[in-house]
Image (cartoon, rainbow, N blue to C red; front, side, top):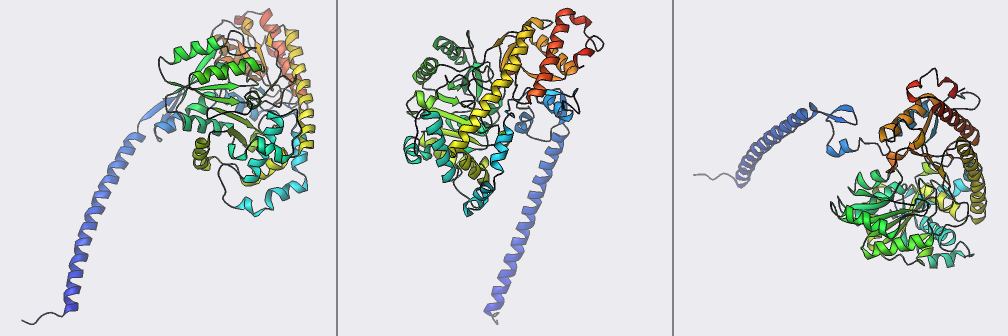
Length: 502
């Protein structure tokens, strides 16, 4: 028998192999096709289902986490957005809506804008080739150094004149991280330092979006700490009581302190802060210091946590600050974390890929924060303007005989309208909110959203509008209060309340 040539045998074997692979591939494609069909069928089945979230019916076109994200970060956001569609203008639209529910400082935007529009700043932001390339996601070296300098001179040693070299010896840039706003940094703190389901003690009332900041991704839960004296701050027994009650349902891992306080506008004294830190350390908790309003104080009593602790934060104290409040630049999305926990910083160097600050904005931030003369001037003018609007607001509240907590810092006043509610319930508070919205075209921050214990307290954000518009808002509020004291709630209607807007 004549043997086939070797090359023909090889071709035959290759053909057999190709046919086998083809059959295998066909089988795989069939299996994958069936699997895809089943997945699509499952998706179709899922999509045919509906879910109700916050009173709205949706097709289940997203997963459970997507459904959870439908919950807005603050519950009054829909009223705020409605205000933006028809805003008050003193001359062109005096009967428009006025939102006093969002903590933004718009009183000194002109000073900031003038500085940022200087020709040299554009060069600083875009001339360096470094801004066009990847870098550490903790921030550009020049930006981290600028923040470290700023923290050393404004927070740690505001009473001393430090050279840049001295400042960087006091606050190491390696302990600084920049993120896209403090919400992202808070999220990462809870995510990296805790576990899903763990609890965070927060003196109440507190900033309405904290629940979202700690819960949406990290899955941590707030544990409100009621305070008998809101002006003084939480006591050790109050912290202990909240810790004991919270520990019954979950592990307590954090203590979050906001000083100066939002929404109260008060400044906690050194004794209160030191005792709170000592107590939290005895429980092995991580302590997060929110100092967003540190440079918007009026009486000079505020002391930063890094100063109170002699800059010895250890691995368990973490301080955040941002451009959003003191510099009125919430749209820049620049938050700053100061922590001496090296392992935390290593974690953030990876995670912050998702929430980094753009390099040109980092360069702008560095230029601003190291311009001492400009910062001094800006902060002084900002305090003066805040003081003017604050006095306008509280003077009108005094005329209305509406109690409020005297504020020493921040951009808001916490006022007690409980005597005007139809009933001292959360439903009564909601009725008062709707009355303001419908007839005075005003939106204040309701106490329930801030974990207030008593219905009827509202936060008035007086710096989010010009003094001229604030005066209109307070006059409307005053007219509404007069009507509420004269009329029974059943007599309130469009006719009886029409003079509120005139």
